[in-house]
Image (cartoon, rainbow, N blue to C red; front, side, top):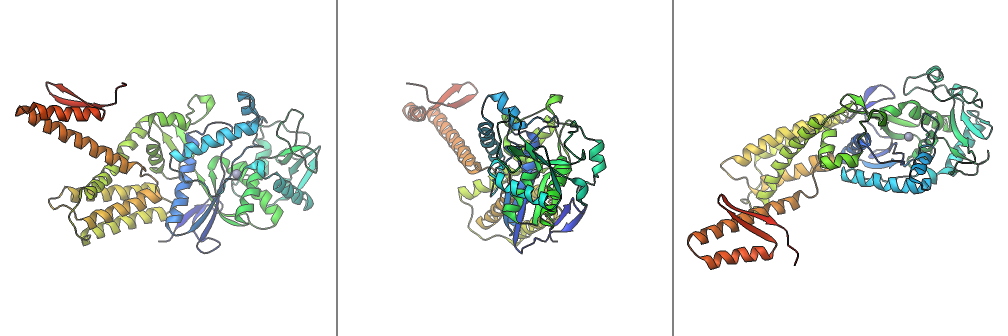
Length: 485
Ligand code: ZN
């Protein structure tokens, strides 16, 4: 089966065929860096990271662009997110952007999210945005009004084709106070006149101002990926107006299609409710990492399909942690045996057939619109059967163990990104613990045979390494930690 993806634009699953053979050009709307990333960001970027990883696994050369919004993103109230944050922290808006961009990547790194190939910042693309606005003015899709420029939605036939919303809905549902300067309340800003107190401002043919939010994505995606490009991703909550506006701007300016496949991921819910500061259920990733290993959060996200909503509860996260540990335990056991020296021998037909079957199931699920739940189910089934073989009377030969390890690396590591880097270090730590227990047992036997000098020698040498033994009636326990002096 070849890769099928659900295209939000056509509202159906389609065979995925990139524009250029072997290459995929992909764009995903990035964060507005005015605050710390929250669980919703975690879900979105794990979802799209897994898409990128799977495309690469299939052999595509992927160029992945994800923007950083550091200017122009207004709240429904008309307030500028960056300026609001800058005021809160008493710093320059671009200082705020720098701080939260770094923190964003730190959090994404911890979730084992591959960094985008290009992370363009909106503030670094103002001349290109001005060019696009000029083009739209020149071909009649936009108009200037009092130093601002608006896109005229009634001029573009396809407006709302992604979300299925019509301009009338936008007019009726308009929450922002309708500005006198717009000809139609549904029109949206391409460029805004800067009021005197607005810090982020640039010269333009229409006076000093700043770009509207939507235009950065039209500009930065096509600048680096061409037009049309293959995949545009983003949160379902951004379908309208953001993505429909991106399409309108890019297609009206260039007279050709914008993005070929639109992928939208479902929202993160907290106990059935949307996450909102006002509901008091807002959780930043940093807060979540205090309780759960980031890999557990990543694994939890992948347990549900990217398009669906995902309900975040403490119990579900804890259960995900136990599930991930079961998968990793199998792999730990395989690697421990490899490290300990397994019998020489090539992989058996039985093991190869088991792995081949698991790989096929995994790929079938992923090929069906990136079905990570089915892919994870295939890994669980595989690991159950591997456990049976590991527990069998015949020790598995090196060939079997290597084949298992390598498939884990490709599927759980490369594609799902759920293998911690420190798994091998952890193995080392496990081995060290086991060795200390061996020494404690040897010392106990020496003491039983009254060889006090040798027994004390073991104790003293362990102590010099910072390992302190404590003899209790029920046995000897140990702690690690060098005491000062
Ligand atoms: Zn965007």
